[in-house]
Structures are given as C-alpha cells and as structure tokens.
Amino acid sequence: MKKNTTKRMLFEMMEKVNPEFEKPINESRMPRERLMAALKQKFKLNHIDTSEKFYSEDSGNSGIWLSGENGETATDGRPLFDYYSIDHKNYTFGVHNEFQNFCEQNGWYPEWNDPGTLMIWED
Image 1 (tube, rainbow, N blue to C red):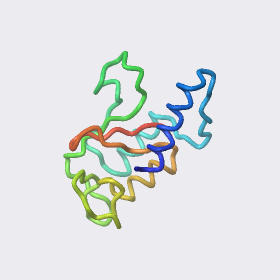
Image 2: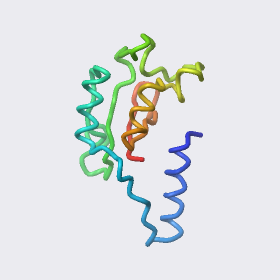
Image 3: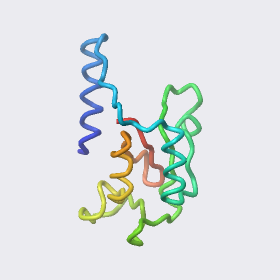
Image 4: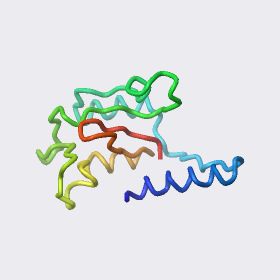
C-alpha cells in the first residue's frame, strides 16, 4: 500500500472516531489549478480535468482527473502511466516515478480509479 494511501485511510478513520479531528494542513501543497497547469505543461498531458467532471459537480471531490491511456511519456521515453507495470524500479504502482515525485513534491498523490483513469488527490 502506498504511503499516502495509508495516511489518507488513517485520517479517515480518525475523523470517524473523533468528529472534531482535523487533519494537518499541507503548507507546501500547490493549489489545484496551478498543479493542473504545471502538469499539462511539464508532461504534455492530453486529458486533464477536475474530478468533479468525472464524478459529478456535487460529489464533494476536489481532485484532478487524468486519462492513463493517451501514451504520454516521461523524459526517459517510458510511458507515464502503465496500470499493469511490474517495473518497480521506474514506477510506483504503475505511475512513472518522475510523475509520482512531481505530484508528491507539490502536496498531491496520484491514485488509480480504474486501469484507464488516474485521479490525483491532495496529500
């Protein structure tokens, strides 16, 4: 299980146990709109939108929706996204480390919704 997924699950459990629990604010988190623009420019993404467009406007989600099937590549020429990858040296759960690290450095983390859909959530 990814570090950020574990942290997110822990925060969700804490909120259930103690309704007054407030998760720490990540001061280094890049605002969503800025991250979307940065990802589009840096990684030449063909599809990037808000998670509300994927789920629904009133879903309460505030993430980023990406297609994992457009064939974008990292600087080393490998695909950015490969849900079925078993290359643990260059990928973290099918997300190229270059992309994964960029997201994490800016206070976000990618997570697969299904084999062709990637979501990025606040850390």
